[in-house]
Amino acid sequence: MSALPIDANAPATTRPELPSRRDLLLGGACLAVAGVTYARMPRQRLASIPKGRLEALAPDHVGEWRYETASGIVLPPPDELARLLYDQQVTRGYVSEKQQPVMLVMAYGSSQGGMLQVHRPEICYPASGFRLTDTKLETLPVGDGHSIPVRSFTATSDTRVEQVMYWTRIGDSLPTSWTSQRIAIMRSNLAGAVPDGLLVRLSTLGQNGAAARVTLERFAHELLATIGAPGRRQLLGASAA
Image (cartoon, rainbow, N blue to C red; front, side, top):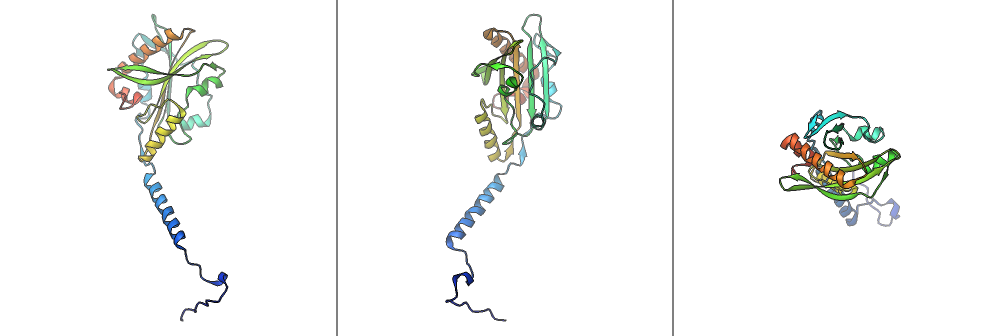
């Protein structure tokens, strides 16, 4: 059967609609964006701490300190989000005959994304009833002439004062804010990878912030020396280790 002829005088609504040049260009652009998006979809996971390994990064003896308890340490309230965020968590309290006691918290998530990001301590302390000073950005010497950026603050409750220092690692980056943390995740995603994330938090009790800084710095130095080069890479990332 032959095709029906097109009546040039027919109403516009009855004419076959052909895509315009603009439609073709827009459609091509959408296909290009979709192709780039698919190509950029993160497929490789950068998990660097195998299941069960985090416990080994908190040894029973760290310099003059020895592991004593996991109680009395401020933690985020347990919720479903925390269970999604972290594959492994370690909480330890260390004591010494000559040094102030130190509390260590490490929380590790093998997959960091847009909504699943390591919680920074400025959230969990207020949730536990503490009042915080402004957070200070400082540097922590880690040996061999290297240093890393850390955050520190004082947390005060009705029963105690705690001096806190921490750092976060996203992949091989050490972001110091929520914004830089998200940027580190996006950069890794654009490179086709899903980064892991780690929080390392050190704290001690007392009003004297300067004395606490000396204690926490010494403990961090001893911890990094104790766990060796592989452990340093897992806590600090390849570039800082």
